[in-house]
Image (cartoon, rainbow, N blue to C red; front, side, top):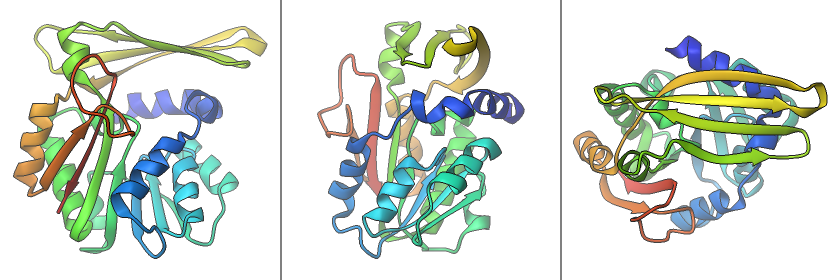
Length: 246
């Protein structure tokens, strides 16, 4: 499963920052939740090319970015240099092994990263690890897609990302007997007229289940939002954003 996902991210890594450019609303959301960034210790899980981590470090936070994919990390290390910023290869299931207890003021897991874990048991393991490395009162901030909406409405395609250099098509395959959905992508590289196709399984993690797992892991003050602007959750919105506290 990991090999499939790693192959997927390697195949799009050269164009990742063009497909998923820095979203200033992510930075504002973190600032709204944490207040003053200066001196805060932040862990960014699934940091990819390091866009958000760099902005957080520029704002005064001490940031550690982890990702499994070497190609994305190589870009982050090469392009996003800051004295308050560290990148390293890391698995979100091994947080308690890789970091000290109560090390971080906040743990971030954005970009639909969490649902790359293919079972509720693994999600709970990740959440328990995040709680271990958070300081008392520290915050876990998560953004994934809204599978309440995607599954209830059988949303079979996400918006196409079309830029000067690439066209990125994303589709879902649903199976009646599985919590996993097949995430199919076609990346068209316009200059060479080439299409890179992939499929990777994702966990269709719904908000009720996620809330149950967060409570089981010991988190409190769980708040769900429709986006990083903190609009109310509910209805036909693709993002699902949440904050909670240790």
